Length: 340
Image 1 (cartoon, rainbow, N blue to C red):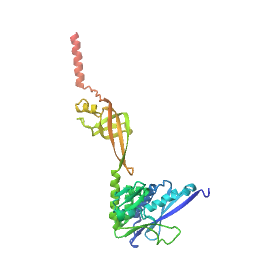
Image 2 (image 1 turned 180 degrees about the vertical axis):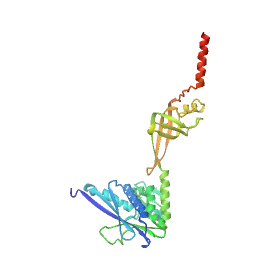
Image 3 (image 1 turned 45 degrees about the vertical axis):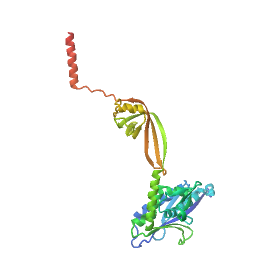
Image 4 (image 1 turned 30 degrees about the vertical axis):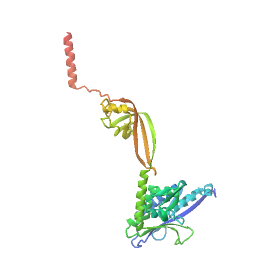
């Protein structure tokens, strides 16, 4: 129905500065940066609190630049609460692409020279980066975006990637928001990046990735009474380093670096009472600990066998050879002759 949906548009210009018009830039090389720019904005918008529909369209704009149009289509009730549009505008400010983005990512990165692990949690939903004259205090959404390792990598690539790749051809990258109703964008506010920014942005991407790897959350659960098959491990009763399989066919799961914490069973392994073979079966309570970094990246899980309920060694049936058959036949014949 008419009036049910309202469309809000925000346009951001992505411009390669200093390009020689006679030399230009290959469009196929440029596409990857436009794709990364798309990913960067979408991810930052999610961090800013908007998980609805966001259309992103790119079209040429003047020499060496492109307009990226962000379209938010919202129900009128949603728009009145300003949640959708505010989240997109907030994301563009966080990225430093518009006026008001003074405390956005480029400002912070330059203040701390890429060392975004140097911050203080103020305990009130705000965070302060740097010290003294270089201190910058930001809100929770900005902090999440700054610390996100994927955003850091994309930002570095979008901001200085073309300068590095098209050496001598692209002198700088300018990114800014413009008013679609105005033809002249000469007074537009945003961010500019040159070769001088590469060091700080590289440090930013490295630090964000390292910090993400260090901050790991864990979730544990126990699979009780499951049957496993041993594949590899110590014959001497070591506590860790075992490999087991669960299931069969296409549903097989392999558990590596398993730790056994059942002392009685470890003693049996140590004294040779139990010697694992590939066809054995062992019934256990297995604790699985899933590990994720702050950004959601999966780390290697941990496995612990808390207790062993049953152990069933493989029963090998001896196959009779022809010589065995002859021996048995001779025994039977001799037995009959003795009876006679």
